[in-house]
Image 1 (cartoon, helix red, strand yellow):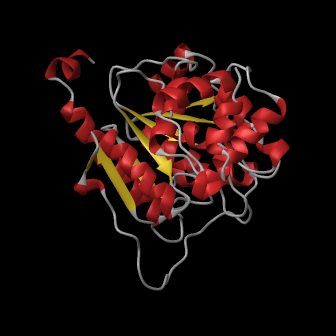
Image 2: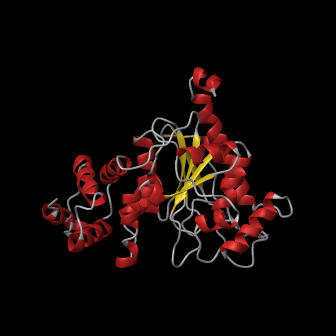
Image 3: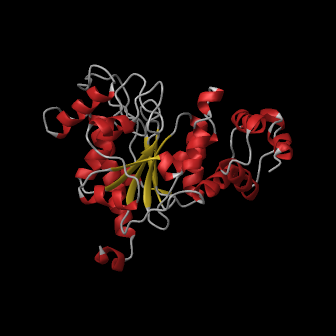
Length: 319
């Protein structure tokens, strides 16, 4: 695919760039994911978008292209989708703890993300140290749910072409649109899924709120811990929950104000093995879970109950 005309549109800088409509965005991202765009053109494309910032229509089109190349999963009840793409740099990565607590409470949970990161501790590494196998297919996902465990699926399994786009980060030094697409993935077709989406800055938070509203999405938006969609264990961030595109006030939480007077007992470092041992101690009742994580857990369960209640009666009885 010749993307030079597209580069001329989007590569004119933040002030002069012209955005793509949804259909054109879908087509160009499809070509990128299919390997039809490579070399300097691919680098120019992702950097131009980085400089311009994506519009909602562009993200919608990119997501359409990713979904067309994504493994399709199924569930007969709502699922909590946790995109885990940042890992931890300093604080322990507690995304696996949130996922395990949700699964233990009876929720179906699917975590997806990269297997490894050269500079951060991924959820995949922690799940491995906890002895939870990676899901390779739909049967593995359902087997994990039957054991009341979260299923973890690597992005390279869930949407292999998208993992290739994320890997450009290590060549270019910066993240690209693929990271936003990964946070928005919904690989379960018509099943209602509560997506836990980390928003790293106010502009992206506003964009994700628009997306949730206009797409009638079910989503929990928060500025999490070092880019992970889990509440900072030291201070609760603001949490906005949307069901069918509308704010679901019973599950929304205001940010914690004032001076933090008590810090949670956290692991001494953020290594995967240390974090796994800490998670086991919390699950075993030897240590308390951080208060902000408990409140997020309760908010997720409240939103999930609302989704479940909204299902047709026949669907609930059939489970």
